[in-house]
Length: 185
Length: 185
DNA sequence: ACGCCGCTGTACAGAATGCCCACCGGAGGA
DNA sequence: TCCTCCGGTGGGCATTCTGTACAGCGGCGT
Picture 1 (cartoon, helix red, strand yellow):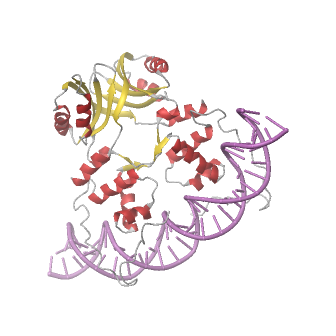
Picture 2: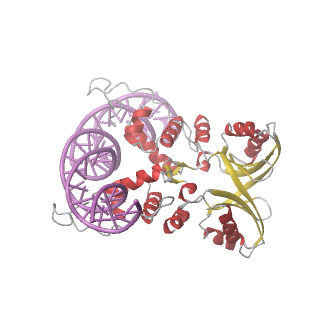
Picture 3: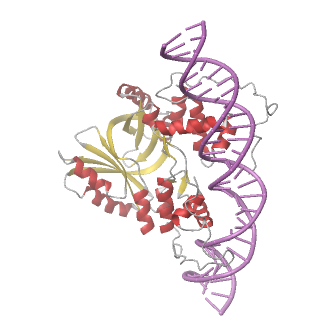
């Protein structure tokens, strides 16, 4: 996989080139991201395996810039990591469901701890309502879902629950459109 | 940062060393993952920036093995990518909510297309019920959430909607426990 | 019993990384 | 107004990692 183009060879090899307009980095962008950040995130999202050097080539900026931006984005918590995205369906859990739990007063902490111990619980949110929780769960099959639900709701403090099985996922989790909007700002 | 240990220098440089027990790769594991796969995924999830060579050292296996496993996992779709995980809160969208939409017959496709065009819509599922959908949305503030909801539900075909604001996220999206379970199998 | 597949070491060239430097130019503080 | 700071640029260096290939070994399924 040869580089698309030489990383640097605009003018004479020793004369400090004119350097294009510095674009003014986000100006007062203290709490948000800049257009270059947006392009960088998009690039990484589309081709995660490329390195810093390749990014700098694609983005037409210096390598150091990309490195600095990346470090800053991670330091600010904008990019929390590059962990592998694992598809639950591919490891034997093709059924997804959302369960809404109603819990009795004061049992919140215990219920959370209980749910955190169930591997099939992928996500847990507390939401507005009378102490309600929203849980994302997966199962090996519809029949297996029953087992999972039993395990999830089989705990003191959970008063009632209702489950909705996911039929289709027309819009899988995405963040890029939001990043673009934040970058355009 | 020198390597913790030399990647290869156990015995005489030309004699094929005894080679530890090959562990029998998943045996009939056609639809699932193996213990080594599990360890690999866990390792990558915990330290995403390490490379193949470092993985092979930590896992005490040959580099080629790690490479082959990774390729296979990606080919099988178990690992769908290594995209950067962006925190919506860090780019100015700290409010998350789930909206349940009830749509009128036959409007499904249009509604999906509409929702897909809203950047604040991070995820969309169709769920059991009378043509219901579950949408995960984010906003810049509670006040901004009103704007987002208006935009989301302001579309012909959406009969009714109810929204639950996320207060807390005791269990952020996780997949490792499930991977462990699948690997233990 | 045989062949296949997966894992192991090893090797090599090419490329990328981490880190250094000097310099430029706008923004904000003195 | 001047000065300093910060972010960007371009270049260079030693070290490290990647991609790829090779040959041997050993369970497993046919």
